[in-house]
Length: 404
Image 1 (tube, one colour):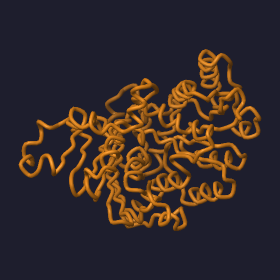
Image 2 (image 1 turned 180 degrees about the vertical axis):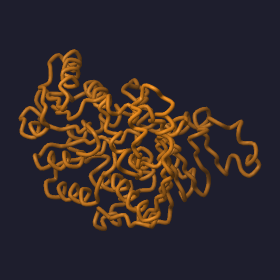
Image 3 (image 1 turned 120 degrees about the horizontal axis):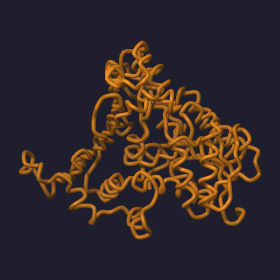
Image 4 (image 1 turned 45 degrees about the vertical axis):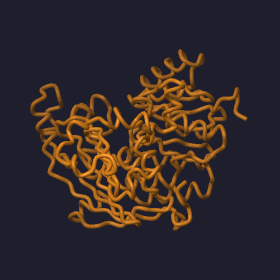
């Protein structure tokens, strides 16, 4: 049993994302934060002070994350820092016997993904990818409808991380943000899991299905130079640098059961935010950008060319009928946490799995399969959009582990 009925959590990384997550975690039953680590002292001091105001005591302030691995007052670890060390920190946490939750991002090598899986298999220490979009209200609505057969057999899905991040990247140096160095030096689908996570769960990836291969194509990179040129207070020295990251990266994935997935990374051009979530089946489809559901049984061919009046019917018509049980309970209890409540839901699942000793809902095999898309897309782009095989991190067990 945990001390004072609380899972004591050590946090690595309290930049903008980590700072908000600390506050979210402190609103979860059976959770407290006993240590906070960041290489920047001001960030640690700020988050420790904020945590003390919420939970009544200040977490230990740490500058070296390795200290959390041997701290007897830390039961579990959250990795919320820059992308690059995520897998290294997850592996070290598992070896130390501390359950670990890892914020989203892409992998930098396939070897890292294999080491992640093998460490889990050797230690048995739980590891979870903290993909909040798997708990989005509309994503779960669609999942519930698919489970009830309303979309028929799913044939194709699309998703995107289509988010104007130009200011975040351009001011990355002064704001100490890791995206700048990544965009200068790497071209790939660098943030695949927001869009891929809900799709992978819908298509039973690792649970009766798997992703077999991908191709990836990158556009030229013009968006950042245009933005910096027209933003006088941005670092004009960046105009002399070549951004490696293409403005739009399109990745197509083929699955073992025959389904296809299209992912789009689109973060350095002016645009409205969208995760472009699209699900197409033999009986109907869902489209995020107009938040509509088209069912053959209700709309048929007569509505092909008169669809605009149906925009937003997913919310206006179908949400009440097919609200997912997770969100029904969440609404009854009171929605809380960032990103419309998705942050609370995913972190609550992590804490409850540790507290109750149950399996992680997004496990290490999911983590490896979803994160590996970054490094594989990089390889495909470098080879002229050549097909690249996606490893089976389950070692064939996906054939035996059917979806619930």
